[in-house]
Length: 126
Length: 126
Image 1 (cartoon, chains in turn orange, green):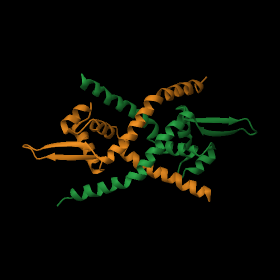
Image 2 (cartoon, one colour):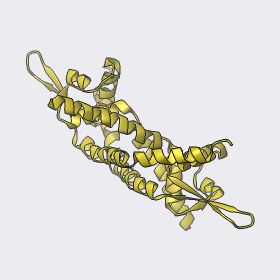
Image 3 (cartoon, helix red, strand yellow):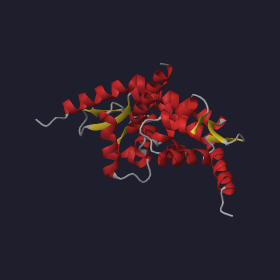
Image 4 (cartoon, each protein chain N blue to C red):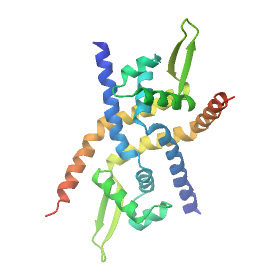
């Protein structure tokens, strides 16, 4: 009975995790969220903040984030109308975790690299 | 000058983030870490805990995790020798964040789904 409980736990992890990955596994997604984490921005301003992003990719990424409720597109009724993008309360909660992951990487990536070098040395062909 | 500082910040994010993704973007990697988070296990025990993993994929995932210093492979000198896999202090720090991400998803994924439905309704062709 206890095994059954643990088993469904791991399936949950798989499912939940796959869902998080839908959102966070694109580099562009995370870079757009980081850019907006500095404050709301117009389309051109976001593009300037992210080196190497194509217009097509930026448009697609913003649309997907808007659809997921992670970015709000705000049209100001000026002449001509201006459009600004900003984080939502939902993506602000996500940013907390993305920042923590980034911090883990900054702190621990050198350990991963050292472990790889050590492993490769131990497993060299003679 | 201030813009320069922010700019390098975002490049850092890209780089750090790409590195985290190397580790966490595979579903099998995360499932193996979850399985070992329950305690150290033998190869066959890990396989039984993860539905649908092939022997080839499990071997490959364990080898990569060992190379990254995230899993320790312990050979006990019994007859015949037994091999156990366990988390390392390094992967224990990573598990904290993976668990938090999982919790974020459990709490917030319904909001993402609702946002998608709403977006699709608003953007239906007439």
